[in-house]
Image 1 (cartoon, rainbow, N blue to C red):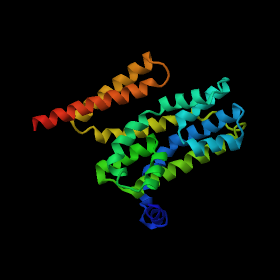
Image 2 (cartoon, helix red, strand yellow; image 1 turned 90 degrees about the vertical axis):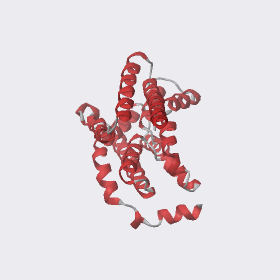
Image 3 (cartoon, helix red, strand yellow; image 1 turned 120 degrees about the horizontal axis):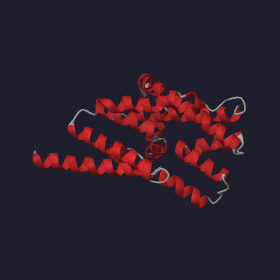
Image 4 (cartoon, rainbow, N blue to C red; image 1 turned 180 degrees about the vertical axis):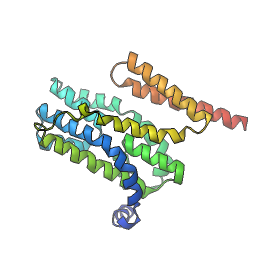
Length: 241
């Protein structure tokens, strides 16, 4: 298994860098402002540049890091409460991992661990979108995960290092680039009745959940509702055929 990982990492020529760069660059327009803001927020809360950068290196989960920083700065120091809260926020990763499991389970354990760690919303969206178009490619997912990881950690470091000289990047409105990019990835996938219904159910559940549910539960609510709806519709179409 270790030989599989070593062989993969020692053969950069096999990585489809042009495709990775082409797909990742538009997303960095949204990732960088959030990374800078995470660094600024962490430094303002009393974290050192090393601490906030190390958090990004070890956690690599924007929503979880923002929540952790907010909880610690408000006086909540119980690691149990912080870990449990961030676990709830990131429950959607269970669904993302399940959808990629047919491909990841064929790989060695070290590669599975690396790809699981590097799986964030953006890398998942790019990987699943490529699967629909060209099929799964290990090197593509590795490249996307590595590119986004480096971008996130670097932008967090810059935000923490120069937080006194950088205004809140989210006030620039650049953060809209991230949801806009996700919309671009989503639209081509709405090619049939099932996809349209699942998208509509997910959107309605997310909006209603954001209005009536506390915290980030609307994300889990929308993801579970979409999964159940998709499963029912696909089973129904198989029974008809």
